[in-house]
Each structure stands twice: as structure tokens, then as C-alpha cells.
Image (cartoon, rainbow, N blue to C red; front, side, top):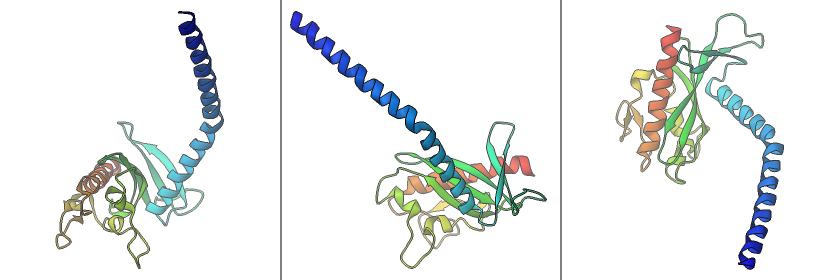
Amino acid sequence: MKEIVKLSGILTIITLVAAGALARVFLMTRDLIAAVEAEREESARRAALPGAVAFKPDTTADGFVYFRAYADQEASGDPVGYVGLALGKGYSSQIRTMVGVSPQLEIIGIKVAFQQETPGLGTRVEEVRKGDQDPWFQTQFKGRTSERLAVQRSADSNGIEAITGATISSRAVATSVRETIKKMGSVLR
């Protein structure tokens, strides 16, 4: 019985020391992690709407946050476009995609900001083909409106060509982009 109490005490001390160390590491790194995440989001906004220099946040009545994008640092005049974060449930993760649209709600660009899909399948939403500059899947969205974002299995169609073997990831991006544009459109029109 004494041995069980002794081992329980030792295990409790080890657990408390480990929990304390983990809490300290969390407190030391949380601000840095938040700063890196904010920088990643800002970079994705700029990639989704390349002509924009300044971004002003705005919120819809239902709490959706989007950004008005301006061509000058003072954020004056009419916006050159709008940027919103699309969240879609992929096969194994939530795919976060930044969507940049013109004032007419035509897609200027999208940028997958975060995903943890299956390597070699769902991760191909960020794949750049040999000889290309940009990810081929994301490039398909340029110039489209929310009505033309249906995912198709064939390149011959008028829709978005699905990634072979990763239809769930392809649909997650397309559906979330469509919904994000509709949310922005409900306020902007």
C-alpha cells in the first residue's frame, strides 16, 4: 500500500512539473504564434487581391468579417475590391481560403491560407504544375462569379476541374468560396 502511495505521489509531481512547463511554453509563444498567423492571413489577402495595398475590416449583420481593399495606403476613395475568408470542411481538415473579388463580385484570385488535407491528394489544392507560376487549381477560379463555381470531374466542362482523387477537397474550396462571395454580395449590392 505504501508503495502505491509513493508511486502516485511521484507521478503527481512529474505531472505537475510537465503541466507547468507546458503552460510556460504556451504563455511564451502564444503572442508569437498569433503574430505569425496574422502575417499569414495578411499575405493571403494580398495574394488574393494583388492590386490592393490597404485593407479595412468590415462586418456583415450576421458577424461575417470581410475586408474592403484599396489601391492606396490611406484607404481612400472607392475600394478596388473585397476580400473574405472562406472556410470549407475538407476530407481531413478545415480548408481556409482567402477570396478576392472585384466590386462586381467577380473573382480576382483565391489563396489557400491553411489546409491539412491528405498528402498527395487534398494537398494538391496548392500544387503548382511544372512550368506554371501559380497553383493550377486556384487559377481556375479567376474571372468567375459565384454562379460558375460547380466542381466537375472533367476539364472539358465549364466548371472547376476537380483534383483527381480529392473531390471532397475540391468541393470544399469551391463551395466555401461560393458562400463567401454570397455573404459579401448580400451587403455590397
